[in-house]
Length: 448
Ligand code: FUB
Image (cartoon, rainbow, N blue to C red):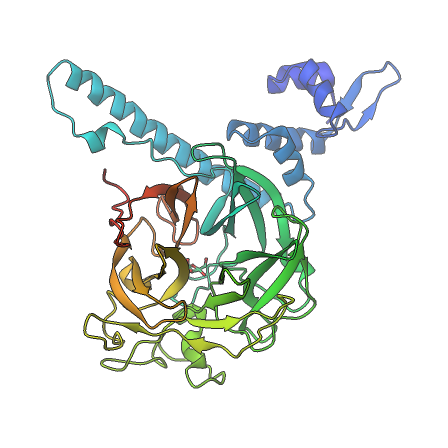
């Protein structure tokens, strides 16, 4: 079936002027141009136009649509799946806003009372809505906020506690010029096909700056299904990043967080239980385990496993030291126990410094909080202090804390956009209240 530009315009509701513009910017080229000079479109162009309209409906810019449609891994079926869940989410948000307005009108007439929380229902919008994003690592580079998240994808993997449903294959970089400014997608910065050693699961990454270069640290399964960290190098914070051919020797587990001291030394903190495989390295050697998740880790009164750290080499491409454990102590100076699942480390380590002290924050995984601990020394031991962020929609909780323009910000994710699917998450952020002594006011994500 072929259509002239006029016919396609009538069928799709897109003006001929717009179709000509799409041709000019090479977003939608016609199949051919007839002798009469009319543009003629075939089935492929019709299907592409439908995709363009879905993306436009979801507020994607033409530039972003073009980048997506022409990406070598573009998959029409997957794109339809993503459109569907994003549209369903949009509908749910509109329903919530309509309900909010209806209630506000009734409340204005004095017929009902409305709480302040209810007045904001539907406004707690994700930071990025055109794709699923999670595990934000955020830094201030070149005077802007740069966000390095995981890119969640629809897939058939099992939600089995081993992370088989987190089959991510690439990273996008985002930035915000200011608090409240739009979150700009700078496109794909790194793809797994360019990483010779990696096979799947590009999970939580982080980026560090040194000597004029940006270093992107990311975990992925190697060919034996073992989590390792790779590093990719870029000339600017947006990427693209060129991966090193092999993983960092001696690296293991997940969730990179790089902290650079005032003397220029960079430390990578990492580790995660269950699917993150940290228990497999309990002895210092890789000892895989087929049984129930977490069973080869410490149990009961045994000290819980802490995150690991390694000092990065001066060229930032390898570990200068072997990974060591960071201790987290309770209020009596005793290591947190494995059974203390409400407070012990699970994954998502992050470091920030406030008024001369260091703060290690992390997820408690199966009890779903982001907690924090304090120390006078970067490498610990840290003493448990409290909860930064309570449970969010979805199983995982993951965050970063950054100071920007005199404010402290908490970036995190939840699964609200996908209606609660653990592996389809979206970024959010909020201001963090920190008292002069470093105490963090707990964020209750769905309340005032
Ligand atoms: O994104 C995959 C995993 O989910 C991360 O590595 C964990 O921290 C959890 O957020």
